[in-house]
Image (tube, rainbow, N blue to C red; front, side, top):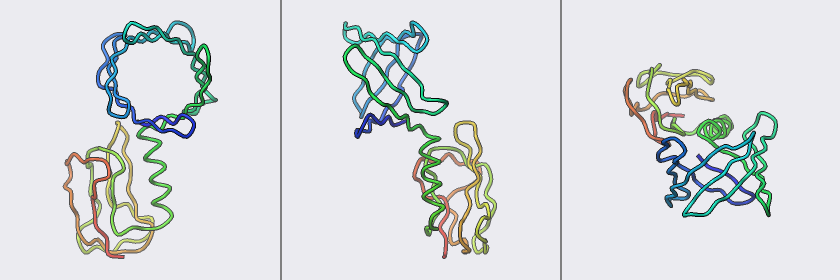
Length: 167
């Protein structure tokens, strides 16, 4: 996932979690920390023998937080796989590319078309499961299926081209 702090965006990956012990990477650099939630929204973090406290205040039911430390406050925006997917889908709805790609890793559940099929705007061409949710990938303009690069049951990567289209 990504976390936006002001103008900076950091790539965060959870490597492992066992009890309070958490291993994560921030922009590819590994951190081993001990995290304890002490009160509602307050956490204590131990890293390399130093203690840090932070108060997390969630803005409504969104993925935006205000993080308060002893000396600073930060506005944080969490951009997880679902948010990336929705952002990508909005871009895709603006204009049809000559391909259908997956913005995140997942599994091909069903391919609804064959090579040579003519599809109309709004037709579902493939169903992908990611994070235990199924998503229908649709075309947003009339086109023809040029090439199918996946099979049902395939595990796919983020940004992988799934189907090529003839516009």
